[in-house]
Amino acid sequence: MNPGIYYVTFSAATTDFGWGLVVVDNGKLHGGDLSYLYRGRYEVNAGILEASIQVSHYQGALNSVFGPLKSFSLILVGNLTQTGFSLSGHVEGQPRMTITILGEKKADLV
View 1: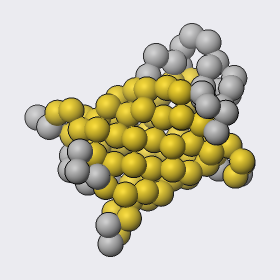
View 2: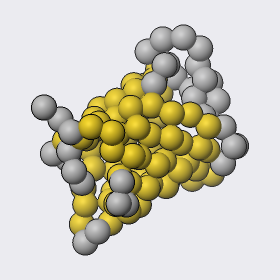
View 3: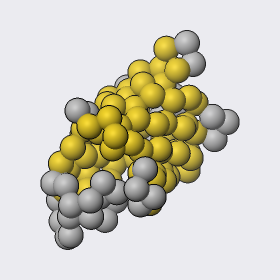
View 4: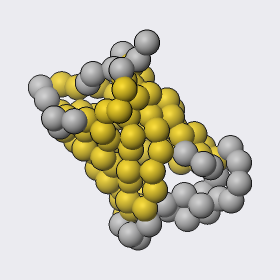
C-alpha cells in the first residue's frame, strides 16, 4: 500500500456510519476521529490487504459504530483500489459485529 494520509469512511452492520483520517506507512497505521484513536498493522500479500486495528476511546461520548464501547480490536481483509483500499471484517471475538471501511488517499507523507 502506498504510504500517505487516507480519508476513511466506515459502516457497521447496524447501519451506523463514521469517518476519520489514517496515516499509513511501512506496515503500520495510525489515525482517529472525533472520539476514537486507531492504531494497527497491515500486510499486503498477493494483492490481498490484511489489517489488525486497535480502536480506543480518548474523549467525548462513547459513540463507536458498534455502540458505547471503550475499546475493541478489528480483524480486517480486503483489496487495494485505484484510489486507496477497501476492507471488511469484524470485532475480534464478535463475528456478528461487522464493519466495512473504505480509504481514499488524500496526501503523500513528507
